[in-house]
Image (tube, rainbow, N blue to C red):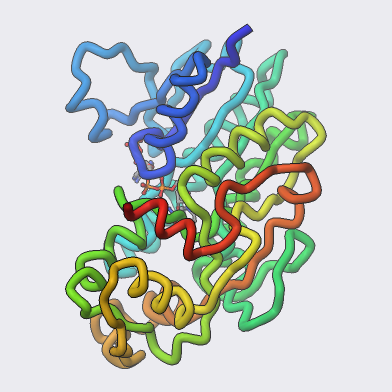
Length: 305
Ligand SMILES: NC(=O)c1ccc[n+]([C@@H]2O[C@H](COP(=O)([O-])OP(=O)(O)OC[C@H]3O[C@@H](n4cnc5c(N)ncnc54)[C@H](OP(=O)(O)O)[C@@H]3O)[C@@H](O)[C@H]2O)c1
């Protein structure tokens, strides 16, 4: 029988690819759309369940018969400067969406599995320490966001539901996110490492992000935190070299930390660009997920050609 999926945040980078993969596998997908979602405007006439997480609203019966809920919803972390208001939106959008879903799952007789997005940012600035799911949360704004985001799933956990916390690394896709943002510069030979370039980048190719989410949803013995990252994280310097190589251009420049701090503000520059995590996908590997791309060079080559 076809699996029935409910996807929140489905219009984003990961959601778009996930929904396409599920639909092409013949599964049933219900996309939750917010009143102001961009997908709403482009697909008029498409009946959507009522979903307004900012007001704590999810229509009655929306989760009935669902096997899996995937929650990817949240205000973009990198799109705008971290003003006080923007930081509040980043936190509250994730807490409210997650808690509406988790509370509803808690009240369902047949509880769908919840695969809830989180991020390797939960580990804070990990330096060059290898970080598995057993590593403790770190310090800083992003670590706090992830902690609160994950804690909002607790009503579903406490009610006996299966909840997987998919701690995503930097998702690589030419269609959006960090890679698409850097590509124009690298294609013009203007790419460069960020600060000293020693900070780690835990990346994952978009196809593996989607494949891992499906693997997590379908393996009943998996719950709790799972790093959704490729087995071979790289430093920013290595990432810069690999991307320049695939673009066929040099990347000899370095963007000074001070310039990033002026451009993005010091907290955002420090946590998002100058710090990093060397996370490894211990639980994905233990449970038999086969990565399409373990190494960065082949992943970039495939994504960009
Ligand atoms: N991409 C990465 O490298 C990466 C890395 C680590 C963690 N993550 C996390 O994984 C999740 C999915 O990533 P993504 O790259 O697909 O994110 P994305 O492209 O920013 O999409 C997130 C989606 O969340 C919904 N959304 C946006 N603003 C919202 C708000 N204020 N309140 C509630 N919902 C809102 C939107 O979907 P609708 O319009 O359909 O509601 C949006 O398309 C995100 O929460 C992200 O933080 C991503």
